[in-house]
Image (cartoon, rainbow, N blue to C red):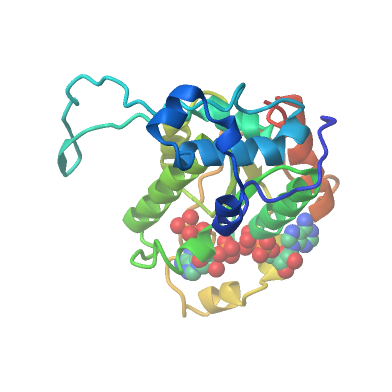
Length: 285
Ligand SMILES: Nc1ncnc2c1ncn2[C@@H]1O[C@H](COP(=O)(O)OS(=O)(=O)O)[C@@H](OP(=O)(O)O)[C@H]1O
Ligand SMILES: Nc1ncnc2c1ncn2[C@@H]1O[C@H](COP(=O)(O)OP(=O)(O)O)[C@@H](O)[C@H]1O
């Protein structure tokens, strides 16, 4: 396991704290002439981050506190059409993924947990997030059930809407990974094609598919929400595993399944995933 264990601390001070500090002594002559009264916003952030994180990183984030706030020369933006969005341009941000990863000392990725209802997706996702947090790593859980309370509340459980549910969560997960965060997506995602489409959205090897291969009988016997009972009684139509399909992954990165008829405990499942992250270098930058 990587040795970097630190006590999490707020990355940036409250804005009131920033304003009270006097950073003017860090200004370069040129900037001081241009802005004699106070450093610019980017300088404040860089200095505050250096002050907060410098000791943890063992080095300053900015070598001398100078700030290149000049607007880079740009060629005319290229306009494209994407789906129904016409004449849109892509804006490249100056702070890249590598810099964010370095700041967080981890690599952004998506852990995609798939399996039947009751297979333990949410349990694994939350346990994993807690364990990573305790070790000093930043993660975020996108749980299918939760996302359907907001962003995806307009979607049903027919095949087309499930595909859209998965696509949107894939896109959001991609943004988290791009921010250097370990994003944990836990949703049934029953169709192979939809999961593979999310895999294709991400850079090589940063989509980690975890298949909870727990038999239907076990999931049904757990029935934490009573949904299988309702589905068997015909009160829920199109319930995955009962009267709707589930297509297992063919080549997942991590397979969780019972051994000699015994399901791995939540702790064992978490360890399995964290070992994978560690081995593949996601817990360092
Ligand atoms: N018809 C039907 N089929 C499957 N699941 C159903 C259905 N209706 C409601 N639910 C509840 O919705 C949760 C699954 O949502 P997901 O977004 O993960 O599903 S999907 O990926 O779009 O298939 C699922 O949560 P989990 O039990 O955590 O899997 C159920 O609580
Ligand atoms: N590895 C496990 N072993 C035994 N029970 C589990 C395990 N993982 C989850 N459970 C239990 O199974 C039920 C369903 O788990 P949950 O995480 O909600 O599944 P899902 O999100 O896939 O629907 C819960 O009551 C949970 O406590």
